[in-house]
Length: 92
Length: 525
Image (cartoon, rainbow over all chains, first blue to last red; front, side, top):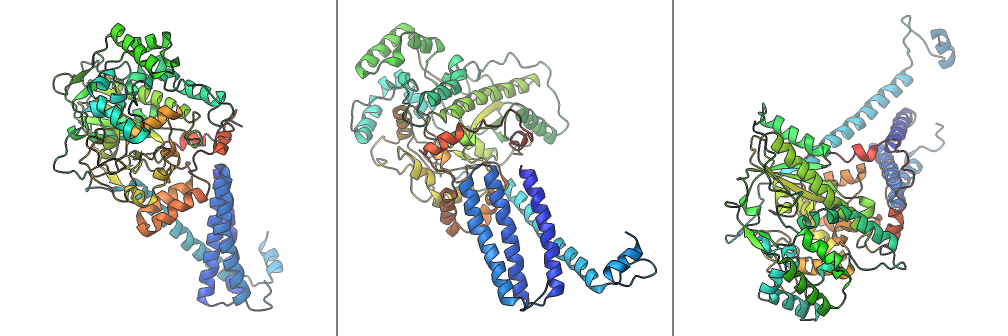
């Protein structure tokens, strides 16, 4: 199960890298917005890895708290940056 | 897809060589490759640093000894005292003082409780103490009770599994090409026989019990007690009479043994091995459920150590297997680079925490690469954490922040109270009298300090990551880390849900599609 989890995370990572690269040629944002976006994405991925392993090891409390303390801040950071720095009316 | 189709789809120009000339697409691939590559390289770098951190750093500061440090006489260990009627008669003041100060009963007596230990009835209304849990406890301890291993468990030397017999030593000595080859062969054999860690330490007289003590109890005596129903006697007066009768009938004689005169050879190397205990079973502590993995661990200690002793003897060298006898297993474990001494007075092994049992092989074979003490920042972490001390039902653990040369818990100032403490070495000391008293009272092997330990984790990457990161984390954050452990659902004790959880761990094990827990348990020393 853990191997499957890492395989899925590899796919997510690859898709994420492609998405960021695509975004980088579509919009212009200051460097700190990019830094925040990448940090948010990596935190989200870390949280998915943490929570996945915790659920697999049968400690759901760790999994749910992992989603809360890692994935949620990652998502919020990304959402904040997209809303604040992504130019209005951008069509991706 | 042909080049002409690409042209049609992308509306892009194509060179005569067939390469794309779309700057936007090229930029996309370039950025994805560079960005992804940078993140992957950073991840690989972090992984490499983590792997190096898991190996630990050589700790030249260990051991920190006082000028008056001396090897510890085995007769003063808690096990020897509790299992020896002779010591009871020689040192009645020890029972009296503990009873008066801690139990408010100056007639308190350790020895009279030992025959009834783990023989009390179950309580089906109490999770962890039901018939189901008690059956598991007795099953776990069944091999030690069937053999004379129960004597070895109490530190009695030269028993069937921890025998001093050297008749198996081959007349021809195998010659290894290099010391590394010899060390690897020893570790490979240890891994095969069930060790999850194997370190090789130089024999150090400071960690050997000196003199060695044999309380004199025998299998015949214990079986006689069983036949006479001594374990069912509840009245202390009756028990005293029964034990007196046993002493007169079996006439056990205790004796002290010398390394120079009695031990069959002069050891030069001590092979230290760790056998694991089950995470979910230990998580039920303190209960009879977790006695299952403790008893099982004692059995595996014995089979592993005696198999390794036989292996060394087969190579033509002297070897004696050892469990709790002969020397301080924690000190030898540290010296062999297996882990660090912790607040709960046990060895914490990275990846397992204190959830292991230690056994040793004393040998005169010394053509090996000896390991050195290592540090992972564990003792430093223990200074702040104190989760084991909080969880200890008998309050046996020292709560002073730093390590000390002497025991400093409750009643430490009373003359003679610390007879069981090996003082003069800087470490976390504990009151093993309180600890063992709780075992007797609860009729369990307790284990609360193991289950609650922040380093006691299942074998998954995120726990390894924390162990690897620990040496780099400022000590100011250790408190927060130790608070996160229970917040994330680990380390609770006296938790009925953990008992229920353990009894469901067999679900789905008819097939084990990955064997992950088999391969994942084995690591390097």
